[in-house]
Length: 317
Image (cartoon, rainbow, N blue to C red):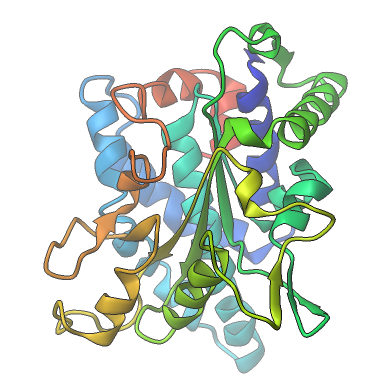
């Protein structure tokens, strides 16, 4: 099928989520995909977008449906192998879901493998953190980029054949160059994806502080080669958790809730909204707070995408 630039990158990045010979594919095919398909009811056009949006509020149940796959196993080696899926599985599920909502739009969500493949060195340099002259890796689990620049750009009229290697290669170069040359035309939202909440929230809270405009510490510098997060048209940092930890007794004054409330992009989970805990479902990442797309276009193109063989294969449904 012929697609625009962002959908060409979307198809390729989804391919990196479903890398062959990975334990994740087995868990996806046997557990996640059937539950997602059952929720979406792809064969029924009526109400599909609403079901796609509500999917973000049941992702915890879907993730935990594989608990036997992840923690089970007839021997220690099998169990340890399966448990290693957990952390990357949630990262991939979040990227998958954001791309489902963003289908047909000039927005893309990339997990770590996608970032390495499709983002220029200048982007990664912007997040390079140095402490006492020692460079450390930043917590960039999922990166969402939304074009907020001028409309009617020449590249917006380009189309690419999804099953053409040459077209996909051409799209990759064009997208990488676009981010490299026009970072000020992108809204960038970083999501720290953690299966746990109560302990894991401390790390993204720290990174959010480090990446906040105006942050200064004599031993800490953000960016390299004159690139920094200030080059983007808009930047925010958020938290997305399953959560797997016990959260039911958390109140507005609980430490994990207070910590999660400090993130500039907000905090999200695989459950419906809970004002008391200040958490929103994953679908709400598309908001004015993050300067991601909003309105009826969000999730409005996914069914058409799935109606085509290449599109359904890309999302592995």
